[in-house]
Structures are given as C-alpha cells and as structure tokens.
Length: 193
Image 1: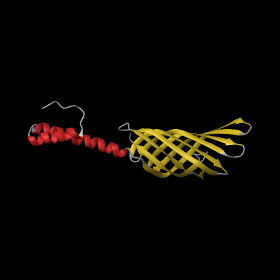
Image 2: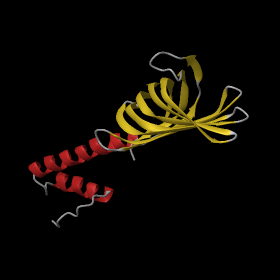
Image 3: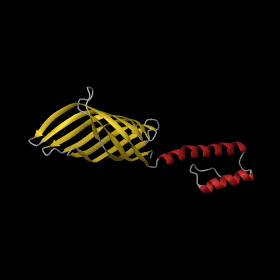
Image 4: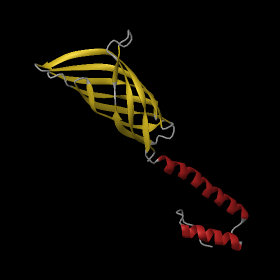
C-alpha cells in the first residue's frame, strides 16, 4: 500500500473505508484513524458554527464622571468625560473608557466614545475595543452607532459586532456627577473567523 499524503479528501476517505473492509489495514490503525476523524469533526464543527453572525440586543446603564470642559473656539466646546458602563443581553459585561462631546453653538452635540469592553459576547468571554458615536439635537439622540472588535479570552478567536443604540438621561448621583444614562442596543455579533 502507498504511503498516505497528509491532506485528506473524500476520495481518500472512501479508499480508507474500502481498505478497512478488505482487511488491508490493521484494527489498531483503524481505531487510531477513526479517532483522528472524530477529533477533526469535533474541533472543526463548533468553530464553523460560531463563525455565523447572530443578532445582538440588550440594555445598558452608565456612570459619567470627571468631566473636563475646554473651549476650542468661539462656537465650540469640547467636553471629555470618563465613563463606566454595564451591558446586559448579548453583550454582558463592562465598558471603561472616555467620551468626547463636541458641543456646537446651536446646541447640537457630536458624541464619540472609545474604551475597553470586558465580559461575554454571545456567551463567549471576550476583551475588546468598544467604540460608539451619535448626534444629539434638541435633546434627542440620532444615529447612535456602536462597533466592538476584540478577541475571545480562551481561544484568542476574533470577535466583531456593530449596531445601533439609544439613550436616556436618568439624573446624577454623588459617584456620577456628570450624569447617569441608560438605554438599549441592537445589531449583530460574530465570534470566530
């Protein structure tokens, strides 16, 4: 019998079965080869299943503190705020980062945030960069978008997600003098290649 190549194909698998049935391969080698095929299936099947995008939705709440206000011109003020945020749902964890609000003379606000998300994404432990943006006009949030990029903590597989978000002002507290906010998010996430 010829030595086997390292790559396997459906044709080679058929030849292997034929060789086993004809008694050309010992039982010990058959068991080892079957074990290898089963392990390949067990390892590859979950990875390919995880690679599909799934819907993401849930809620969040946050604490804003340490605001620094800086005028950058006659009609623009930039406010930098520290934020800790809790996520519940498909994203289940904590975000720590900074938000930059560009406040214009007409009262509109451009919102940009960036920080680190640590927690679970669709049930998989993940650490990644969470970014978001929005426009606020007349105290109404428009075009709230979010993006998450990271890796799983165990397998170091890629994680990606994006979607939209909503927010409402919930007041202030001693620990959160620059605001308490909450809202919802929706979108999709992908865990794996």
